[in-house]
Length: 306
Ligand SMILES: C[S@@+](CC[C@H](N)C(=O)[O-])C[C@H]1O[C@@H](n2cnc3c(N)ncnc32)[C@H](O)[C@@H]1O
Image (cartoon, rainbow, N blue to C red; front, side, top):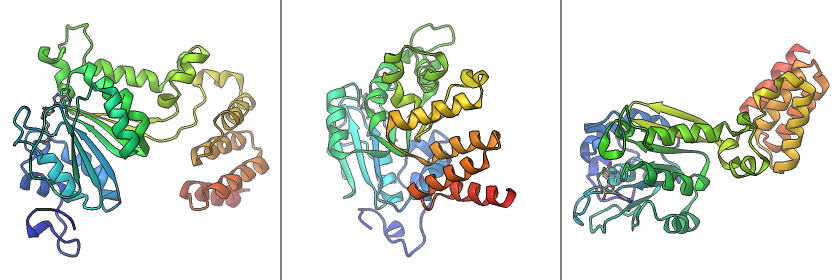
């Protein structure tokens, strides 16, 4: 394992430290002051030893070039095969493990972020623990979300700042807070439900077709990215054959295939009791994704029942 830290955490063959243990060892405030560790553990544990790319905005230590890096050291130790990118407004001259890269960058610098993401992305996890100014978080999210990998997660920490006037928050406030940003993200996710003009539909596709879920936890939000094939719920009254047509159009328009596309089509055929089409749909899906567990499960279930 690459890393500069205590022998206790060096080898996978020895006892593997939990994220909580590492947060304590590296004095990371994600554990000390917040309850974020179980959330991160849930996101990362299944992929802990993969070759992940993690980007964290906010190294810590603010103006002090010699301070900060606690969370970066924790990530580096927890996910030893990962490459961790830490960005901060201020220059940093700190000791870091070999799998950590430091970049001096303002999270509002969209060109700089894009360049970083083009060069080093896509990222499996992006964490915004920077300024907590809503416009800054929005700039970073809009720029980096396209560079999040499929099944990746984008985390915005400290959303309690939405209630703090230092961060434009407050219950009475009609100003743009982090919670307003979260609401905006949910609206983007639901684009097709508000029947937008074609241009907006196209522009928002990166969100409406890729935001799987927006999870609001205490003080923290997780935006999960996963390819989704969505047909507006408002189209339902037009009947299942119409929904099938819309789904087939999606395949033509998008030109790419994901397991969710086939499961959606399957559901429609199944509800019409078109068992042959349902079966062929799952088979076609399995041609693209031979080991997809959901497609396999549905095919076994369908054949067991028909
Ligand atoms: C709360 S600290 C980060 C702590 C660190 N993530 C940890 O858990 O150990 C916030 C950091 O964000 C940096 N920061 C503030 N505004 C920023 C901006 N606009 N762009 C990038 N970094 C910023 C600050 O300099 C500070 O070091």
